[in-house]
Length: 130
Length: 466
View 1 (cartoon, each protein chain N blue to C red):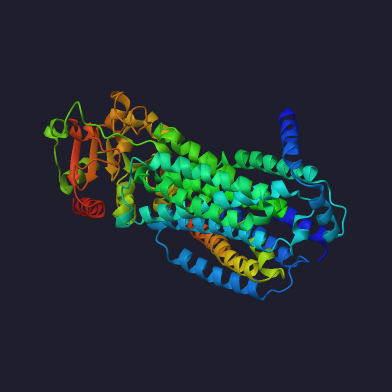
View 2 (cartoon, chains in turn yellow, blue; view 1 turned 60 degrees about the vertical axis):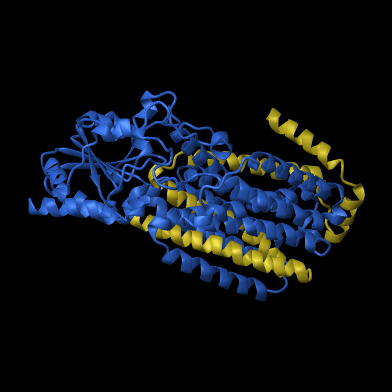
């Protein structure tokens, strides 16, 4: 917990660089009372750290036999960036962002769909034995 | 769609990712685990498309259709021996997507203000920079890894003395550009693309001089990077699902990297920046190999007939020769004669973690017969015949005996303790470490010089006739 607290302190330091103007502008455009940038960031970092722990706990238990499918499967999961690409491609934010978003959707989808399909192919070979 | 509902969907898919990975801890539940993760992804995609910011679906659906088509085509067409290349390629595309999303975010920043609700500018810029930097390295590094795994000629064995300083300069430049993004958010777009360009070059230089046997480490590391890049993108977009999924992948990649490094007794630093000095100073290869005995498929068949316990140690050579199905035939015939057959799998055999296991699974060899290094070493004294198929450094006893050898201290499969060792190899050429293997010259060691597949097929034929 101490570590987290220190992390939060450090983060606070960084975010003090930002101008209060920016926050006000953001709050106004979204029309909702935004949580302070720092709290929000600490929350995200908390999520990040906890997820790393969960991931490490699970993956350490996976037997070497399944390491290749694990890699291609987790690879597919890392294509989660597709969500960001969808937001960029679908929002009406004009030329460049939409084009980049579209390209992002294509690449990330290859990663996601291809990754899951090839993992399934591999795992099916492991399953068929008794 | 209500944004709270979208958040709930994201929570559900995060749980499904974790459950899916948990399923992958056992072969029996692994298929379902993979499917669970895939459904979680589908849910997240649908929920995101219903986000109020998403106005038009046309380009999204077109992108998904195109990407799925390419992905499925590659996934169904790939041969199991080429799996490392494909994983590297997918990895790179994921990294590229992170760069593109970071760029798109900057390009559409004014319009997409609600996405970053509540985030302060400095940390968003830092996160965007990180997703561009790590994503760029992942992209170009993975493509180089792909090229090396495909054995494209121009990718082989490049190294230059200026590489280390160049990497340092490029790394510092990229971080400097990232800092500029934070200090001058109004020009962030320019700095971002410059930095991505620098990181592309950096990715190429980092991977291009890494040799074939170190590939398992690099692939695992790049896998981890692609996850971290996705996490960074999550910080940009204020999206906890991206952060969770990305960090799961990041953690898995780091753990695999660690396992691979331990299996080679090398630090990650040494793999990335060091070079293996080729040895052979004290004893020349000719000295070591003066007493090598070669053998024939018929003789091997006779030895096998008399054996009670056979151990097969596959290496990258088995993948190159596509010998896994022949190995299955050999296993069957030996089992039918009441001979016990096991496989000893070294953690870094092949070009990616678990490479050998996938090939043997493809050939329908039950995974219960595949044993880890420690397990086979414990029972090695009872092995009558050990067949080394296309492996070299991972069975080299110098790792135990010669403290000056480049592979000193690397854990190996101790086939030299078996009663008889058969080495199936095309020639006496050294493995990746570039050192001679005294195993080949031991009294109870025999060389069968042939292509891996042909050798096994010949042995099977001899066993059937005998």
